[in-house]
Image 1 (cartoon, rainbow, N blue to C red):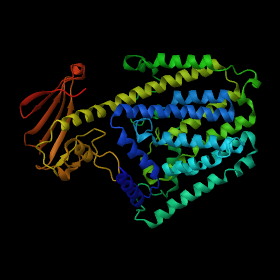
Image 2: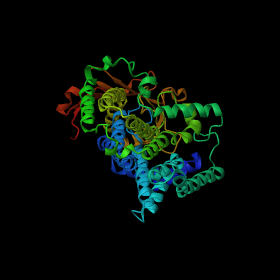
Image 3: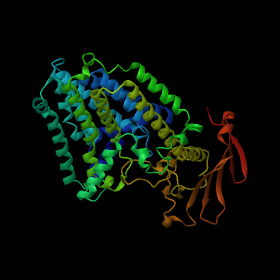
Image 4: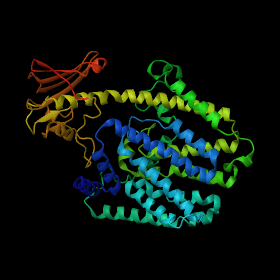
Length: 490
């Protein structure tokens, strides 16, 4: 594992100009421990819940209980799953860990400035440096440190106190620039800086908008949702669960939320505190955007409706701005509960639809893995070319980046053989010597076939019974006309 971490860091740095060694180390260490999807997804969910709790604790120190409670509720109701690069679906918890480290650093800095802990300042700096060495978007987060001390210091003084963090950011940015100037990094690579002002402005707007709740559903960039306003379409069938869930959430908010009367009862009523919370929310919503928008890759790739990974952090910023608005205007708690009910209802429907849309790719990969593990490719010699099936997210050619989704190593882990894997539309390999992998799912069976060329008979076939029969824990396969029953381990 150590050699893999070193090699991946070297490749990312020398070929792509990326200086984020802690993210790579965390990824390899995590997947060296977790090998199954369920504990991995549970970890991502747990980290997200930890982010919400830590964020609420920080906001409580800055703006009081009411704003903290409201902002946490808005985040819980608004975080969508995106069928794109999404922190709650993948990416080994990197965004959650960066956010947790940032929140802990901000809290430690506030304690240091208030004189409550002599070591808190050093801890804040170390955590901030760790954020920058995990993900480069953290280079621009240093202004946030003024926001957390503003309730107890005037703005000029609070801004001056951020100089240690600005110095850390400058050092990390200078190191990154120095490496890019001296390594074999290609200026035209995906992670080079886009130079066209219009492309930058457009990417900036797309990423900024991604942090606003319901924009993913509204723009519907992948055409997987019904109209946002046709709520009745989601009121039945497999998505009906979301209505009682959202209603219970709204009732809980209504019951626990203090009435917005009597300003003296709430720590968040102080204008200085509300101003600091507003600045903190605006910073979290905006500061992750500039470096993403500067990347040539995302200037080409982003579309209206979803942003890249930092949208996870931006949602927290927007939620805090909405909470401050509700607190400052004295919005009735019934109105707040109604808004959160609608937001949670639509978000739950969104997440259910995204899960269903991704299920096909997940199921196809699981069946293909079982087929290879049971000998589907035993007649394909090492070094053979396998043409991957169409329309499966996992069936992509090996990435150009040093690490990522790789069918070559997926099949190697299952068979112990190295194959050349190519996409279905790669005509250069569509010849009689290549093995074509196909996956079909019908009402009764899921079938995986491996065939050589276009006119040569099937080399091997694997067929699985429908999931309704899965309680019998039996799998049926066929290979060259010979049928046998496989009983996988529990």
